[in-house]
Image (cartoon, rainbow, N blue to C red):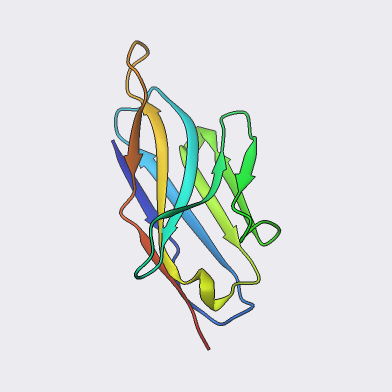
Length: 120
């Protein structure tokens, strides 16, 4: 199983970016999918999460500006980031709870990270 994140880049304050993360490989089902971020010198922090049923949750610092969504059929999770601030600058990682077979337990898989830089 692999998670491939994309969509990062350089954007000015107030701008928008949309991150994508696709899961591929032997996948029976995916439970929760999440986005984390890690800024230089900081610990990795949870940004947003979404369950199979579509329930979402957000860190206080991004609520109202970021929107997480998923395409279950395509094993993909998105993070729409609006009104970006310099403090949003970080490497963004996707994460998913995946069952490879119907009888297996779920394991956590991580994407490789995509860099978001918010600067004028």
